[in-house]
Image (cartoon, rainbow over all chains, first blue to last red; front, side, top):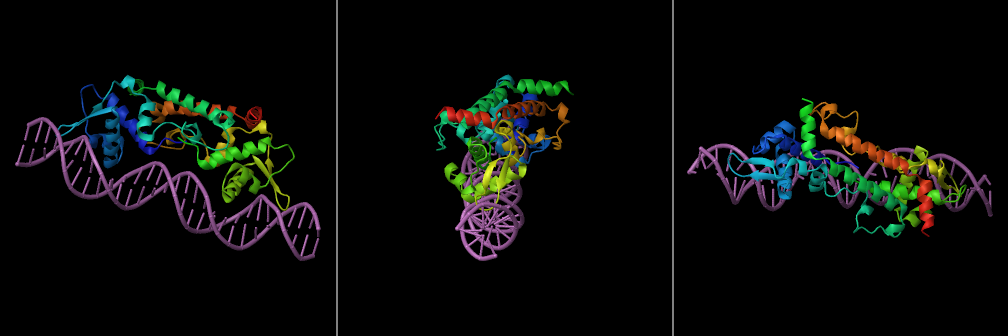
Amino acid sequence: MKITQECDYAIRIVLMLAKLGSGKRVDAASIAETQSIPQRFTVKILRKLVQSGLVTSFKGAKGGYQLGKKAETITLKDVMWVIDGPVEINKCVNEEYICGRTEKQDCPVHCQLIHINDMIDKELEKIDFAYLAEQEKDSE
Amino acid sequence: MKITQECDYAIRIVLMLAKLGSGKRVDAASIAETQSIPQRFTVKILRKLVQSGLVTSFKGAKGGYQLGKKAETITLKDVMWVIDGPVEINKCVNEEYICGRTEKQDCPVHCQLIHINDMIDKELEKIDFAYLAEQEKDSE
DNA sequence: TATTAAATATACTAAATTAGTATAAATTGG
DNA sequence: CCAATTTATACTAATTTAGTATATTTAATA
């Protein structure tokens, strides 16, 4: 029932990029340092974020990273999905999974967990990075 | 973000006991067989449930297990707590944890995750085993 | 009261996942 | 061309989860 460390890092990275002035870029080393994430691990996470389109990269000297979409269109769920995959509170909420105990529609545990899972999903979708970045500014 | 296998098993075990006529007991071997859980692993889980008081055990021949409290007073959260510990979507929601990035009250990620965590907790508390047992009977 | 069917206690092993590292290649600005 | 940067792929280490083994204690009952 936990977000992985990697996913936590990813959230902080995206938040940092969201707070960056638009058009600006920042390189992996700076991200690693300011967010206290091991350098090589930072790079690894950034690649996943780039591949998913949430972040855009620029190669070569003066290269770096910036958000790939508007901050208000990136949600906590998006980042979590890219790093940890879909939120699945239990295996049985995955449609492909066959638990073998009862038909899913007859399993009360399954039914309740599906409901909670949906709820978590919806809450995570509500929280976008424009909002998060704004919150952080307010408190400075 | 997943319930462990052990916790899933525990939920099924408690549900089975909740469906048992009151006063009746069932032994670990039968539980293991009907729930398709490895025998020794079943025993291990049962000990945790007994130690927490959710389940009561009877030693010796004709021994076995039954619920330690009324089914309507046992919730999904109780069982999950006993096996997996508190639901913590992220380390930072634990009060003891110091993330070092910002003061928690100033961290927008922390604030949002706390909110979601509370919501999950409350939902899990709503679901008791009398209800779950009832649901299962209905579908038979 | 001896036997047997159970739970209890403690310790161990194996598998899977998570976290993090290493090295070499490709790209770009100056 | 050189230095700064990302990209690609593969590897290792640490931690957690899943499951096993063995010896002991307890209680019913024949």
